Image (tube, rainbow, N blue to C red; front, side, top):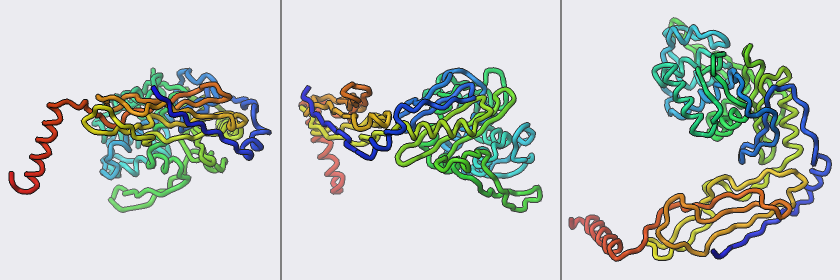
Length: 385
């Protein structure tokens, strides 16, 4: 394979100066039973304390409930609150049986006020029952890679075998934050939702986000609190500074606000994000040898980015290994090259380049069939068929 080698060296004096006082800084000492700090773009873990330990997640469960509701595409539907939903214990929107309210308003109350009744109302409306909705939650968790998570309900009240990990909650949150609706709601400090009383009269109800970090940390922009006797205080938080978004998770942590701030600050002060190419971007177009069509797009299969210690930012280089042309047949999604990241000339990460479209091999029969179809199409357009 012929190589096209592109070497990109970042000679940024500013970053070197900024990193001089922070490189190698010790991570904070936390009170959390389990914690993780993750870069949202790459999924790289920057801090780990028992991140794979299964623990009760409390209301951080509602992150999964919310993303399923959003992805249903049914947020403008009106729900009717059941007796079962209205009687759900714990934190509540104070819904009443028979109440009509949109799924969008329930979603807002779920994420800001942490309404357990809203979680049950959402589950029953979308899946017909809580059990059916929980099955969807567990399927979704597995499909996105949260492999140590098992849900028993949509709200997070303590239940046998209702458990997740700090890593899985960060991974689920990373997925959820890619959705603009989710990101907007969890970053909202305070809002009003429309409320119909028992007489059908419209009111506005003020909701204030339970996530105090939104007021305590300038860069904070999410995500979700949780507290039960079994789980203790929990917090999944996110913050964005410049071009970098970080996700912090602390579980069973009686200093969750301070610990989350320290964890996020440590991440921003110690690490920098080196970005090269966006996921899904067309990196190049390659000629196809003996193909029924002449070109194939090389797409970036995952975010081509790397988080490094700030002191190593200028030592990052990138190589791209890609053929000058490719032989048919080509299958969509087929690996056709890779992007290789180096730090201090040591390979640390690769990202695949894949075919964006399929290209069949050129044969006599396929060429004749293609010409025949083109002829039929032209004749049809001219009204002759």
